[in-house]
Image (cartoon, rainbow over all chains, first blue to last red; front, side):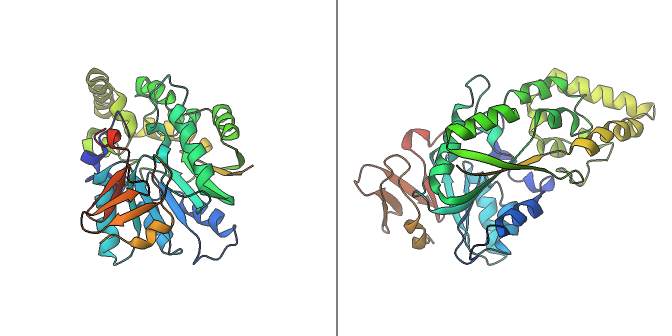
Length: 274
Length: 54
């Protein structure tokens, strides 16, 4: 239920910049549950257009896709229909998961939790989502949260420094590790591992393209940009243009990307019930 | 269009009661009849009524 991005509107272009990055981490942890894959019930909470769900479907028959946006769900429905595959789709608020207690084996949540809360409300909705996930999961169930650390917000993309005001605003929407650990404990959950795929790039095509940020469709694939004011966006584009004119942009990208190679762009938190 | 197998897993997000399927109206209704949820293009919209337009 993002208050700063209209996901119904951007669902058309969403897949131009998003793929199921880190899916190998998800698949690895699900297989390590060592359960009958025919019986596993897997929920993708905040499924978007279903990129992760489609990958999961290759291995597991019972996939649930939940999202607040009907635009995203319709796109997801089309993609499954094109492949003549069955999926359980739900429009819901993931802080009010409509699942019976202990009915799910796995809940995954990819790059969605920062849309739940407005800054300053102490992650009240995130806390509720975690409680609902804990309730819906079986005792040995698995919750996988794919999110971005504060350091990754700034240094996980080469343009982080150019959009500093947006990054600072974004940090208010993402928990620190300590905040997340405390919220998990309150929900009866515990973090068992953190996994970072250093060589995986969320934006994939176009990430290293010096012209990418001039393209609105590319910027729409990264919710940071929607937190820039029009003046800040114009200033950033002017700065980029200047670097491009002086032939400095490619060197800037290369230099900044060294930080990304050290810390990665996103983090998977592997979580179980206490 | 709606896959009724889903009802084994789903509950009303408000009352946490079981849901039944009104095939004629294409709604899921909580066991106490207090909450109704439309099915739109085969997709159940399981949101409390006051959150529908957020």
